[in-house]
Length: 257
Ligand SMILES: [Mg+2]
Image (cartoon, rainbow, N blue to C red; front, side):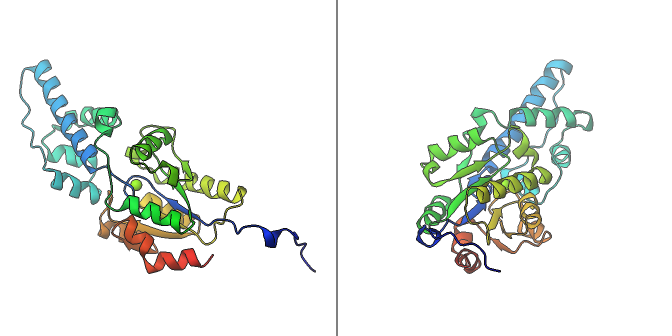
């Protein structure tokens, strides 16, 4: 039996292919903000302890490279606190303090554009690809950052979390739901989502992409190490967004449309 054919369809422009990409890690380097948050958390804890108990805590502040290496290998925040000399009884207070201040505008200003991310985004536009961000950040924060780097006109849609603390907590299930919603919305608008790809820097992105049955590209430019990402078996691992966009693998996915 023949399918009905829309006589106009052959005259319409082909629908644009969509690429799904995470924000923190591929586009933003959050390492300086997370490190400054950690240091500010420690100094606040030290000051309040001295005020209340009149004694000085003997803290060992980690260097940024030590701190970031621990984060990238998923050392628990509790362990990072203990390694920094926070007494066990004060760890919870310290972590709550970090959670409270990490999204403060004074700290958000330390977010930086990943090297080459702007070039990668421009390149996707030149290739005619629709770029959809799927992130646990609040869309307002994403927009503010993109605008300050003259990139907002190159991002076609943002699916973000309404909870300001979601990105710092990085819950995989939340990412799975968000990506599902993003894919369904693109299909609903007539964009092409087969084949497509999810690019991100954590296990949450890989799991979300795998659950959606799409290609997954993990980046080592973010908050997880190569060795850690490998365990989740993404389709490929690249060092940054530009490398991912220019990879043979990505060209294959994007040309298969
Ligand atoms: Mg990320």
